[in-house]
Each structure stands twice: as C-alpha cells, then as structure tokens.
Image (tube, one colour):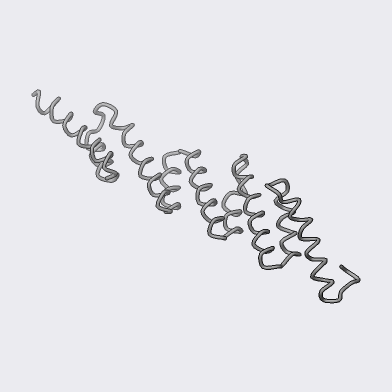
Length: 171
C-alpha cells in the first residue's frame, strides 16, 4: 500500500539523513543500507562513509580513515588524509615519520611537505647548536623558505664553534 511503499521508506530515508547530520555515521550507513535502492540511498552510503572517514582523520585516526577511503576507491581523499597526518607529525617534531608517509607521492603538496620536514628538522638541530647536522637537513630543504640563508648561517656559527675550541685549522 501507500504507507509501506511510499510513506514508510520516505520517513526512514529522512531519519537516515538526520542520523548523518548528527554525525551518527554507522547508524546512518545501516539505515541507508536497509533502504536498498530507494532514492539515492546507495550514494548516501558512500557519502556517509566519506564523512565518517573525514571525521576519523579530524580526530587523528588516520589509519582508519585511510582504510575507508581505500575501500571506497577514493584515492585523492586517501592522499589528502596522509598529507594531513604528515603535517601533524611535522608539528609534533616527528620529521622522519612525516617524510616516510608522503615521499612516494608525486604531487606538489607532498614534495612541499618533505621540504618542510627537512627544513623544520634543520631548524631544530640549529636550536641544539648542532650546526653540522642542521646544514645537512637545510640543504635537503632546497629553496624552502630561507633554507639557503640558514645553511650560510650554520656555516658561520660552525666556524665560531671551531674557533672557540681552538680548531683554527678547520674554522
């Protein structure tokens, strides 16, 4: 009848959308799955899964988010989540981990993140007054920010360190 064929599925569809707007992703996905082919329920399942994954990434649950994106074949979102994690790792001072995450991606943003990680690692070593190591990382940062002038600054400060230690031969 009209209720079971039209009204009930419409109410269930609206309820599934409400659940989604309330960020109740799993409940929403289940509700859309129960609707089968009704309206755009199949598309809404994918939409709900994407929103769930984005929410996971926002809460730093990157592996879970990436798994969902990979299963959906959403590789741009997979990469974006990976870059987001790399950005977070750089902020936490985990430069090598950040580089490992994005170094195999061949896009501008990933390459920029690698340079940023090298630069930030170089700056960290400068702050520790380990100018030799800092220079190595800053050289890898190439044209990122003021990396080249920081290399020159490291050379100068390293020379002063050597002079302070009486090592005039290498200063």
